Structure formats: C-alpha cells, structure tokens
Image 1 (cartoon, rainbow over the protein chains, first blue to last red):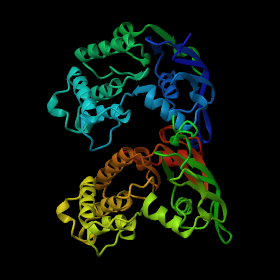
Image 2 (image 1 turned 180 degrees about the vertical axis):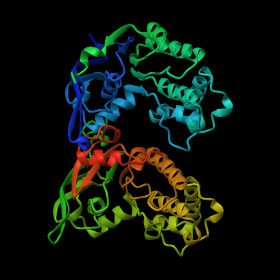
Image 3 (image 1 turned 180 degrees about the horizontal axis):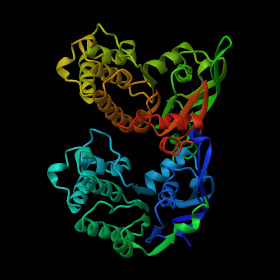
Image 4 (image 1 turned 120 degrees about the vertical axis):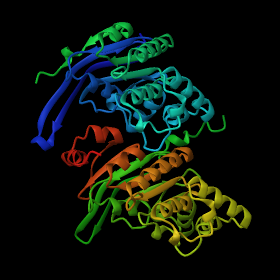
Length: 232
Length: 266
C-alpha cells in the first residue's frame, strides 16, 4: 500500500521542569495509517491526546519514540527523526494544518493571509488572490472585509479565514483540528463540502471533530485515541 | 544538464559554525557552538542578557576573533571559506555586499548627518555604482519598499522617528542584495505598534528576497514571527535548538520552559 501517513508506536511525554520535573505521559503506542482520499477522524474524550497526535504529525510537537512515516515528494520520510529543514519542506509541499485558532501577523489583510500558502509555493500573487477570494466567498466572508486584517473579526469569521487558508493549497495531506467548532449550520455544510472535494482529489486527512453529525458526514474511518492514552 | 555535477545550491550550507567559542580571560562568553545555516533560512538566537548571544553574533559576522573553533562561509563562487583566513579585500566584499548587519541602535548602522538617499546610495557606490541618477532611483525605490515617504529622501535620518530610522537601516543593508543578514535586536527600542509594522516588513522582505538571516533577540514573539529555527542560549552555551514552533510550543529544557512560560499574555 502507499499510505500517505503511517504511524507506528509513536509516543509523547511532557516533562514539566517548572513543576519539579513531573512527567506527564500523553500518548504511547500510537499506530494507524491514512490512505490517499481518506479522512480518518480521531475520537476520544478531551485530554485523550487527539490534538497532541495532530501536532506530532505536523512536527509541531516532538515525538519521544516510534515513527511517523510521511509520504513526501515520492519517498517516505520519518518525521519523528527529521531535521528542521526537512520538516519545513514537508510543511511547504506535503502537509497542511488547520488549527483551531488563527495566528496571523497583525497588519496583513485577510485576502493575503489566505493567499500566502500559495504564494509561498510559487503561485503568482494575482492568481493566489483570486483563488483566495473564491474560497472566502464560498465561506461567506463578505468582500468588504477582505482588505482588513482578521484580528478584528468574530471567532467564527476568524475560523473561516483559517479554513480558507488551510484549504487553498493543493497539499496531499491535511490535518484538521476542530474545523467546524464555532461555525453555524450553513458554514459547517460548506466545510463538509470542502472536505468531500479534497477526498475526491486524493488528499489524505486526519481530523478532530466533536460534532457527531459532522463526524458522520466526513469520516471514512474512526481511530479511537483512548487506546493510546498513556496510563497516568 | 549543465549543473548535474553540482549539488543544488540550497542543499549546501551558507554558513557553518564549528565548535565556536570566546573567552575574555577566564570569563567564558560562549562555547561549543556548532550549526549550519542554509540559504533562505532564518535562525533566531534567543536568551536573556548575558547569555552570550550578542558575542556569538559578533563571532559569526567576523567582527570578533574566536578563541576556539571557526566560522566558514560559502562565497559567491561556491567555495566554503574559513572567515579567519580571508584576505582584507574578500572581507570587505562580504561586509559591503554579501552581508547586511542591522544594529539595534540605527545610529550605529546609519550615518546620521547625511541624507537618507545617501545612506542607501553609499552601499551601492561601494560596489562600483557611479551613475548618480540610477543610484538615486534605486535608493528611492528602496525607501518605498520600506515604507518611507520618498519626499523625505534628502532629509538626514537624525530628523526621522525611531521606526523610520530602523526601516532606513534595513533599506541600506538590503540594497546590495546580500545573501545573509545579521540582526541584533532589530525591534529593540521601538514601540509595540512600530515593532509590528517592522516585523511584518522584515518578514516579507526576507521571504521575497530569499535571504538567510541570523537574528539575535530576547523577544520570543519576534523569534516566532521571523525565524524558521531557533537556538536557545544560556551561560554561553546552546542549550536547546530546533524548529521555532517546536521549541516554543514543546520546550524540553528547564530554562526554555521558564522562558516560554514567562511571556505575559497580551
């Protein structure tokens, strides 16, 4: 098989030096894989380590053991052992991440925040902005807001900007951390459509979704994280 | 293919520090620093005052002789050279053309009594430009790029605000299209709103020009916005290093955890 993501026995523990060196085991024995065109939803109660697993796949959290195989530019790279430059290369051309919260540079206009990942990959600015505009329109962000920085927007608007930024690229892997958390029904439906479109394009996705209805609509497979939860 | 023999330029480091150290008598300012910087990569060096980060920046930019180890730099001909063994002409070439150095205090990096246009144009003349009109046009387009009203081109920077001076210093450094820029607390003495604008500007310029940069800062927010990689220094040593978001979101060393947890929420 040509899995896009193949995780074997990944492990994460936090050591809290400021709290007397307390060891905080998060997950261990994390093993699952994701095929192209498939959306795997991580399930489990809050604190079970779902977000931590996503962050490990993105290289944002370091892995304390095991292997995170990512198909990147035709070869498999182990992100758990990769150099910073390799992780950056993976993020540029293979893995996109839609976080729960938007972290944008203060002064940048919404349309440019959304277009940035495309421009970084060499798309002409005008084309990138056009595509960004189309996505923003689809996510019901009125055009009069596009020139403003998103920091002044409501939570739901910021999240939609974040989704547009995450979905604009043609990356083969997408990680979604509660993409519909603060959206109304109409916009949730748009996200479901966008996920469906990505599946048809062969994108492999890992998502965290608390809403049962959305989970039912987008999940091809559910991986229960509880079994990976480290015994505290 | 013409270049089939050579490795792609991005796969070769631009600057290599090898067991670098500096003592002042018995006082160790910095020691055992090794890393490679690649083209287009921005490295932040963070740590509190006295951690050795400014000493390290001076060693890396050949302004201070190392007590141990060495720094090598890939010259434009592709050859990696030990900085300590460069001739005077080669060293001058680096300082005038291939490198930029942005000081925390713009007064150190600018000539405060001559016009803004001359501050930018001077770097061009140093590399052989001699056509006044072209120099002035280029200076003027750089002032625009750093968002300085070109109507102020004939004014001396001592009449500029702090933020404008810092942007002018950046224009002066970048006009020769350097491949590597050193920055020492570039947003140091500025108001928060001025800082945000400068950071946004630097971030865009660095990515548009594909610059490599080494930025010394005590401000983790600056490191997060500008850098790909970060080195945390304490007591003259590098105690933790990695991808910037990794080190800031998942710090391992006690001191790094302390630094990260000491940020006041805005």
